[in-house]
Each structure stands twice: as structure tokens, then as C-alpha cells.
View 1 (spheres, rainbow, N blue to C red):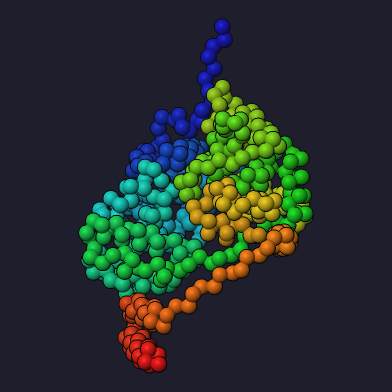
View 2 (cartoon, rainbow, N blue to C red):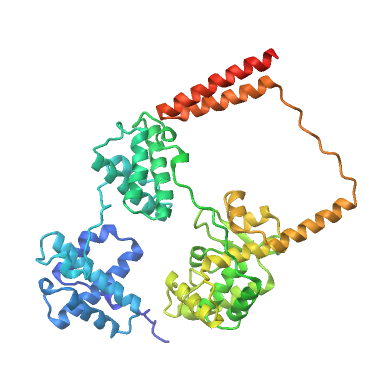
Length: 479
């Protein structure tokens, strides 16, 4: 009988102890690391510890030039360039911890080659903020990270302006919007961060910690809006060439990118796609079970026989890469037996663009645009497309999937043919409203604008308009 084979494990995850300093660093920071991050941190610390023992360097002697030797040491072990960079980054974090605690004599400028600037948004959060964020952490870890960042920025602003929750007024939130602009945040952050702050203010109002409602403090109309950029699908000829190239290779990344094109997946959905993702309903129809990643919406995408074969081939390759008796958890597994990172898909697509010899910039999300547009052109209704793409509202779908000019002309021709074959009913005209109803509507609009107006000059101008409308109403009703 053959002895039971022990699975291969990473030498650094099994290592009993590092040097005293690194053990203390690990114990102090362990609670901040997630389960996955803890493993990668321990691997990085293990390589750093091994390098220190081989070179006999002391921690207080290290600077950025010596850390270049650490990079070469990790590379000599056959680690990828990305892994080498992360190993050096772990070492820098460990040294930085000693510098900030006063245990090591170096300065941060000695470790970092650029002008080091400490994170401005590391403000300690108050208990109320921690309580609010705790509702996100167990079920939505991604949302927790983004909301925590928004809270740190917001509370940094409150501390700088010496404001408390009770003192918050409408003008303070307007200043906060300007504050984000002054700090040079990107457009996406300036759009999303105020919404996160507003949801927190609404929660504070429910808890009776502030007296003014969130909508009064920060009206939605003041928050910067997302520019409505039209989607950029690939032209039909380039799309055909792309699919031919992706389908002609046995590379697991090429096949995964082709799956995005065939099903309209987001890249995050592909990365979290379960191995057993194919489902059969009662009528034996086949669908792809898409995990609820972005909006918490789990959906089913119908599959054609060609796409089913594509998924099966990806599963076969993943099983070979997994190299274990158990089935892998996720659909795509790379040669090392782990999940591919986003950067690997992106670099594969860059390689594909070079092989296509095209100057058009293609990203992974443009394949989703192309899927949506091709479905509309093939006659799929906009409501069905909404469900396939996993959008919350039809408005998102209308912005997302552009109907091409060719489709518009085809629909117009079909509509003209149908109209010529049937009697067109007379259009019903809307009955004219009475003058009194028109003036009542005008007065209602002016009152609403007056409530929203903050500038005294604007309020004076609206009151003058009200007086003019009242005078005209009197003259009209007399006539």
C-alpha cells in the first residue's frame, strides 16, 4: 500500500518563528490583515527574514539601496516581477513600523526612493462611525473598505474645521464638496464619496444624533454627477477578428476573455465565478450562474452550445492546473494552482491587441459593451438586456448599450411597413388647461424655488416674479 502523500506547502507559511523584531511586527499588525492578506504577508516576511540571515544585514543598517539586493534575492528564487515588488513592499512596511515606533533610527526618506508623504486620511474614527461601518464588514467587505475611506476623509475635514455633528449645517457640506476639489481627488471619488457621507448622515439622523435631515444638509443636486459617456463597443470587423483569435488558442486567459465577450460578464464576476457555474432548469435549458459581485444581484445568463463547450474547456484546464484531488472553488485557475489576478487578464488583452495589429484601445469592459450592443442589434429587447447585464434600473441599460445607427434605420423601415398596412388612428389632443390651473402651477413652481434659494438676491427676484404672476393672473381673469 502506497504511503499517503503529503500536499506541498509553502515553506514560509510553515516556518515556526522569524527573528524577534519581525515576530513582534507580525503580532502587532495581524489583526489588520485579512485571511488572504495574512498568508501573503507571512510569505513576504519569511523571505525578508531569510535574506537578513544570509546577508547578515542589521535592520538599522537598511536603506532603499540595500533593499534592491532583496529584490534580486527574491527574483533568484524564480518569483515573478510582481511577487518581487510585493516582497520588497512587505519589507518596507516592516521597517516603517519600527521607524514610526522609534525602534529603528532611520528616516522614512531612507527607505522610500521618492519624497515620502504619510497618508493624510488615517484619521481615527469616532465610535459612532465605527458602529455604522460594522454593518458593512461581515457581508460586504468591499463596501466596508470604501465607506471607511470616505469616513476618514470626512472626519479629517471635520477636525480641521473644528466641527461636530451637532454643528453641521448646509454650508458646511457645500464647503466639504469644495474641500474634495481642493485636495485634488479624482472625478470618480468626488462623485461617490459625498453619497457615502450622506448615507452616514441619514443614519445619524435616524439615531437622533443630528437635528437636520441628510437631504437638507447635502441635497443630491449639489453632488457632482457622473458624465454620461456613451459606451464604446468594438466595430463588427474587429470584433470578429478578436473572437477568431481568442477561440484559436488553448491559453486559459484567452478563453476566459472570450467568455467575457460571449456572456457580457464583468471582470470581477469572472474572477469570482464558481467552478460549478452551469445550471439546468426544468426544461433542460442551460444558464450561467453569475455571482452577485457589484450590486448584489445574482443573475442567470442563457448559454448556447458553443459557449457551453468553451466553459467546459476552461474547467478542464483549471482542473489540470489545480493539481489536487478536490475540485477547485473557482472556474479559472492558473498554472500555479491559484486564481489569476486582474493584471494577468489585462496583460493578456494587451498581447491580443498587439497580435491584432490594431490602434484602437480595447479594455476588458469594452467587451461587455460589445456584447450588449450586439444583443440589441440582434433584436433583444431592452428589458431582457437589463436582466442579462444585471443592472438595477433600465436607465443604466439605456446608457450602457448604444443602439447603432444601422439598427435605428432597420427599425424605422419596419415601422413604416407596418403603418402602411393598417389604418393609423387619429391622435387624441390633450384638452387645454384652464388659465387658473396654469397660474396655480406657476405659483407652485415659484414657491418651490423660493424654498431652495439661499442667496437673498435670488429670493428677492423670485418674490418679484410671484408679484408679476399675481398681477397678470388678475388681469387675465378680469378679461
